[in-house]
Length: 68
Image (spheres, rainbow, N blue to C red):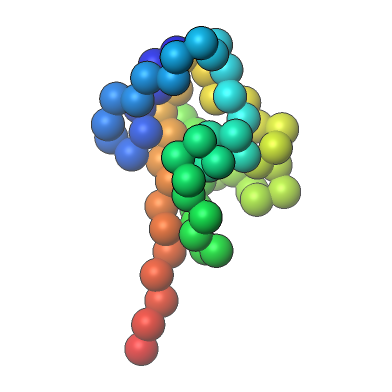
């Protein structure tokens, strides 16, 4: 499966779909504050395990940083 992740092509072999939770684990993203959008739509954290990413989807995973 091929997706666009953070404006880069990403190939996930042997898959035709993946949940946001699985994708976060696959990429080892463990940031406490992360914003996820799939095809421009915001995905709430509660929906990561049931939101499915499919072939050619555009995914943005943005780590929010705060400071002072």
